[in-house]
Image (cartoon, rainbow, N blue to C red; front, top):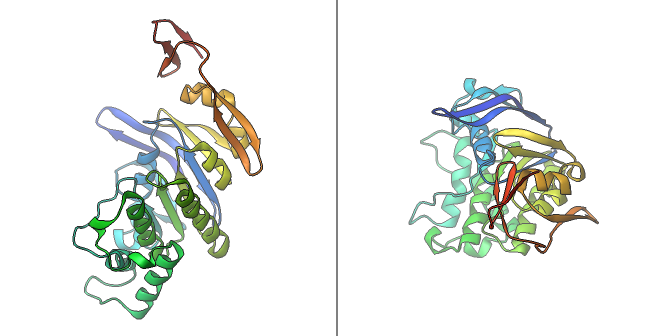
Length: 276
């Protein structure tokens, strides 16, 4: 469903992504993890067609550079980390924007459009908010509404950028569980960036760990989420436990001076440093 071939993104002289290649099949869930600044959001924005890039992005056999924006929106549904919500618009009207890729610019919404919007609002426990203005929503409510708009697109690839960032634990599980159910029910391919490594391990079939704009490690969750990898790429002192549904990351209490993470060097607050 998704193929990236040596995807690279540059901002002036700065390389944000360097020759990232991966494949994602229909019905698969890929988690993208990595420290801040690793290139996760740049990756999903490139897949969504929002940034210029080198290399190739294909979805369903279609290459991005050969497909118009409206057609691409029928293939890729994108949930940004920091969505822009138009003031004065109701939740229902916003979710219906997800249907615009399926008809012309001057076409009116159809009965089918309204049915799809109602169904996704119900599935995300948002039916009670249908007539509420977007600016009246909490951060977590708004995040679910943005996901509802994306689901209304009925695209075969769902790309999520930190979809649980503004959500409490229960709604975080709800959002990821719905994504998991949709890929099982409809063969939806899901690519999701996550900071929470335990949640990523629980829901993703496989993980890609980005570091410095490159794919540093890839594989099943228990091969990626290891104490050695988290120390090397995150500068984290953790214990990785074997949970019922995948690795569980448990931070360890500090045993010495606090350290600041800088690349591959740990620098303590008293000025000492060590290589990993």
